[in-house]
Amino acid sequence: MSYNICMKILVITKPEVEAALEIVREIKLCFSKEVVKVIDIRDIYDKSIVNDIRDTDICIAVGGDGTMIRVIRAVSRFDKAVVAVNVGNLGFLSETAPSELRKALDILRNGEYKIEKRLMLEGYLKSNPEHRVVALNEILVHTKNVGNILNMDISVGDVCLGAFSADGVIISTPTGSTAYSMSAGGPIINPHSSCISMVPVCPHALSFRPLIMLENEVVEVKCFDEAELIADGAEHVFLESGDSVVIEKSDNYAKFIDLQFTTFYDRLREKLLWGGIK
Image 1 (cartoon, rainbow, N blue to C red):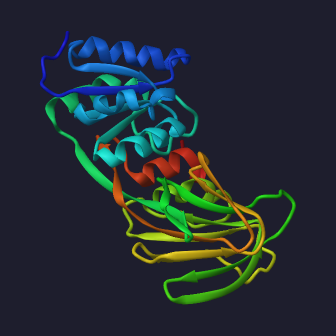
Image 2 (cartoon, rainbow, N blue to C red):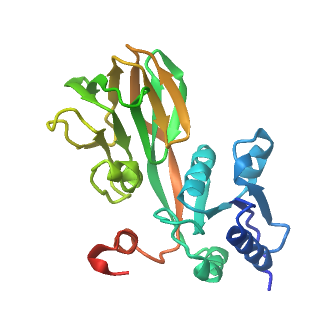
């Protein structure tokens, strides 16, 4: 049965994934074809679909966390909300399982969901503030040459924390605390928290420890070796020795559609198998 609703829905997926195609077919069955448009995740940054993003009311990302991150990064500047259906592996960002799809679509149809805003980060070279990268999870400053140490000075606001040597440093949002930051030994943070974290990657001294900062604080990393600025593993900016990177809260927020199926702590227990409980 098709629902006759006024909202416009943009579905973003990987068409080569059979499980994702099954989800797309189900969405098309539930909503009239006039309100549903499907695009390939590989086209999400194509200028030809900008109007589709602007005109949509709800974005549905069908895939894993990588798909969700790419969609959020693309649509956040248009202030659009996203819900994810997980057909990937871990799925920290994807609340809805395929078995819950019909229930999720009913909730969307009836408007019985919440929209939660999560902070994002921006990073740029101090010498070129006009060119900025945006991240939902983290911004990484890392040595360009694998196996070499990156020497850097790190400041928070007007205070220089000191000179550090490591493979790199991760500046993470609370959403990204369960991503690369967690793998590097950083703390797990409730994604609704108002903070950012700094986590060293393979530090050369045990005194270089993870640090939680206020969300409005600005981090500056001055590199004394060749390095890379990497946003969510997707955008890369190469740094010369002597370049400084500035990382701060973005003016744009990620907007997640919360269907209230589970809580953050439920997902932690399930995904990390805490206590052996599934």
